[in-house]
Image (cartoon, rainbow, N blue to C red; front, side, top):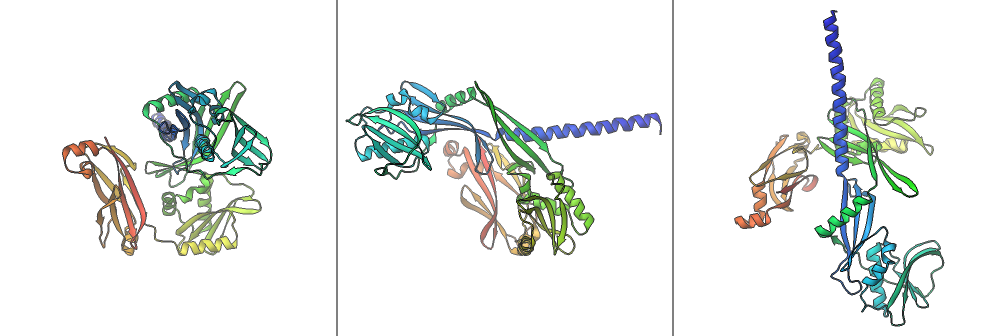
Length: 485
């Protein structure tokens, strides 16, 4: 080979390696940008100014959370605030607020702790602020004690000193081991009502949070997914929050996994639960066949790319129509994945198992036999299910699905706009992909056809749903959130 050719291939090789590094960095940057967007603040009013029976002011709270996108979150930092005519004061913890001179001064001078109704009202006030209450109150001489928590013999309560007239003189937070007196009264409190803080107060609280913001970092590792790496990205994530004070620093670490499919991210507990995501399961099933021992070895390597197994326990074997991939042992039980296949080696189902034994294998076979049709009802376009548009736009929509399954079951697609049925797609020979569009002018005019009504009310958020209906019941739903500018 000539020197020029050698030089060319060397340069080409270096270019390809560089390109892989660049694309990997872009992939990680996109994942980190999404995760940063999941850090969200909330600014709420817990005690409203409108109710001046006890407190001449408002109690507000600010929180910064990491949102896992499934209704759960983990706290990062937060603070409580007392807003009165005299100012806006921050408190790190609720007990500091309740026991402060500012809180005592903000109490309505006309309010007295004399009747049972008064005690119940003050008990609810403390419940609003702390979100904790045992709904129990006992008396000690000239003190009323409002219990907020009990753990065996350890009791937490607010000790409120009062005059004979019922006027509140002071409040202390007490935590000690004791038995509740037999004379303790119980109250039934209503659910706490909160609302969003106004923009000005929210901005003030956000500024306070920035001052106490801990150090946050995401360590993101992209995992190797043979055969499906172009359609699916899987990341191991380590989220570290480090708080520093005069005594040093402490860190809280949360580990989870992140999936990217069709440019949409989803957080899951761990890579062990990857096959709970139907899109990922479909991709794997379409790319892998397990008929021979060689096929099983290839699939096991795919699992190794997701998460390393215990090298002393890792093995695979077939029992009936189920391939068992043992990854580790926990408390004497073999754990891993059960992959059910048909006679040709086509994968029918993949499921995680915390106890691989004959009973679990038989259950996996039964599950695969009775699995409903996989309709593969998926949003292809737009890339996100949350979009922003403006008047005059037509947003194209494309939905893919398993046409054979849809036609075999006589399913149809229902369109729902803002909670109301708006159309129906019924065809005995439904073809995939389904192409539709969302008319922004149509959404904006849902409140009426008069132009000034459209301008006044048409902006904001609208929800467009494509519902796959099977046997006259909603089976799968694609929901698109449209914000009109």
